[in-house]
Image (cartoon, rainbow, N blue to C red; front, side, top):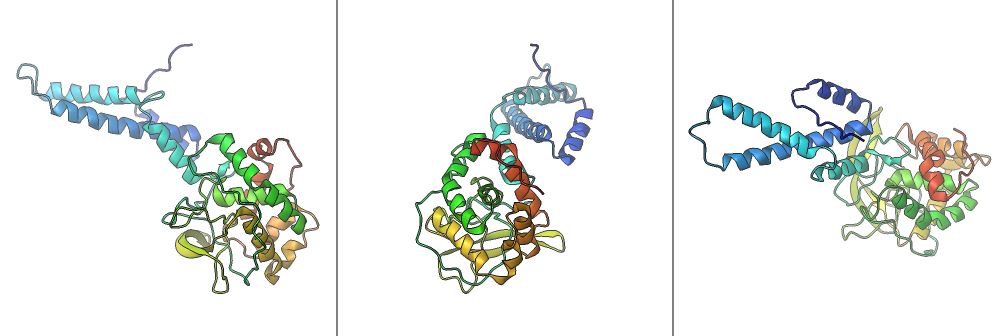
Length: 315
């Protein structure tokens, strides 16, 4: 197999192609942009190193400096191609983690919970009457951000919450995969789950806010709200739980104790009716919330994590 040629810095057409790919949210374009950024930093390092060297009185001059700069630029592009120096990989992981609503199954609108209390979090969940938490079930912390990657991380997340999702699903009369998909959307498959100021998990898998009637723990963080179709950043208080089991129990009680979700609970066993009912009742301000949940539930990542194809949920 022949080696892939390094892009030439004089080929400006590549930047037009990169711009088109970025508009189309092409993952290859994301990696290419990360490599371009790595190349830019590499070029600056080469330029700084060359500036530290003594000048050559015989061959120095304007034209020599020009071609040396051109050479440094091309070398930077070459060094950053392929595996490069590793910076591009870090940028790609950061961009994918921040932009993907739930891994590779649904596109985000900037609505993921953050791994800390100082950055972006989930879309808003409407406050409701206070919920009485059941006794905490077995603790299952979401996987720590960066602890694993790809399908392994998603599978670990699913297995950690699956028993609680199955129990809650029986209470609500819906397939467990739809609750797992909702939690995956809210937390980016656990990679961006909200954490407290002490770094401990909040187990808030459903983005439920803490209103004045909530008597449990809470964490204040930034969230993305959609107002008149426009995403806005706001600060809000969210509920915290002692375990994954408590979180799922509270989610069930949250829906059953609030009259606004009565229609959603009259879903007739249909996951689509359930999630669309939640959206219509104002559970989330993201206009694509229900469709995102269903795409994740039916996506290959969910099928792989559950170990079988399962039933396809209608939209």
